[in-house]
Length: 159
Ligand SMILES: Nc1nc2c(c(=O)[nH]1)N=C([C@H](O)[C@H](O)COP(=O)(O)OP(=O)(O)OP(=O)(O)O)CN2
Ligand SMILES: [Zn+2]
Image 1 (cartoon, helix red, strand yellow):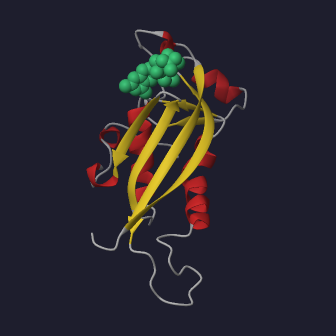
Image 2: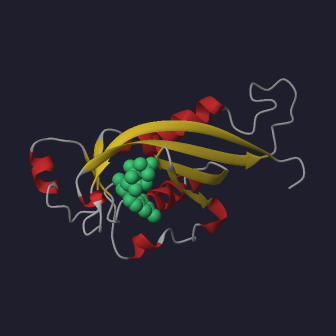
Image 3: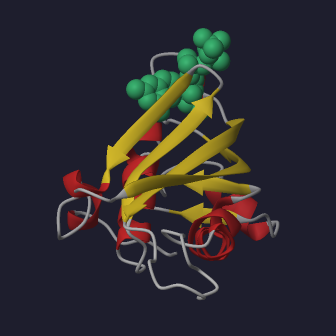
């Protein structure tokens, strides 16, 4: 739309996961330093003299919300679907886990993050999640179904 601007805030978090049943090495428990790019789109605030004059959303406010809703929940956690053999022993030992109910692919995680932020009052345009320095998944907010990503139809989420 005319006058709109996209802005982006970038985050990073470390997490472990396991793709049970994967044909290759990702069937092992392993970790990633994920990079998360959150892109927002809107018209910059026009009112003169406001603290947020000229901002789409204050980068500091984006940071606080994305940290609270996403990063702090996933950082240094074992990201689980729920069927990983190692999950119960990790929980029993007090390790941080995030049981998401979906297979923890980059695609599903990006969809989960896009839905979480879209339903948190941010004018989200897109979410790009880098799983490795050479592989990412991107979800446009307009492509997230109203009822949420399909995993919500067959499972809950403890976050
Ligand atoms: N479409 C997807 N394919 C794969 C995913 C995924 O989430 N979506 N995930 C994995 C593994 O979890 C892991 O990310 C391995 O990915 P890969 O790119 O194969 O990792 P490498 O370390 O081999 O990367 P290089 O940069 O090529 O060394 C697997 N597939
Ligand atoms: Zn992986």
